[in-house]
Image (cartoon, rainbow, N blue to C red):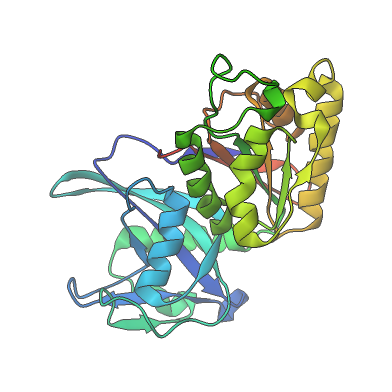
Length: 302
């Protein structure tokens, strides 16, 4: 299992996607020609302020090509030097959603869907040739499921809240974090939400649920109060969540929980327990046996 973190030391960050359509020898890949550089490249770009990198990847592909994508498995990052210092580009597999729009920015003047073999004759940069081969290898693997595990966004402090703890709401910062999380969940095409019924967890998912037109499934066992003394049951619940994700590849689900419960949730998902900060999300990609093959960690940019 690989684990990648959307953070690091580079002074310049960017994100993009390798977008395929078709399979086998007829598989095509989305390329763009940039007149400003006179190059053929894979679509990518820099993040906006307070933007999760997967959201950057989806937004940049659409802005530059008119193609809306949902993200799949992560691909290796590419590192190189630019005038302002080290640059790192995060990459994902991308799957086209619907018809492409004719409207896109002017960074690219020509878009193309060559076969992979043809693309190797067009791409300007050696490292993108290697990336393309890596993407083909990942795309050829049978799809498993995807689970997004998130710790609720920043809540009001326990000391400042005079009422029952399950009713404690998000702070102003937490509400901003929840809005950003909605974009992150959408970037993967998330279609199902499972949550503790505590207010701070529900509010973490509210913006996404409203955008997606879904009702989160509220599970009392995931609350701090419901989970206390029931570690085995929490683990078994998450094993069931893993089985659900495996049964619906291409339809990721998000699960929201609390710091004291997250370790058991992680164990149930086949992971070693690890700390998560408020509004941090782990995107867990499963193989066809339901075992994690890659885990992305996305800390909140807010």
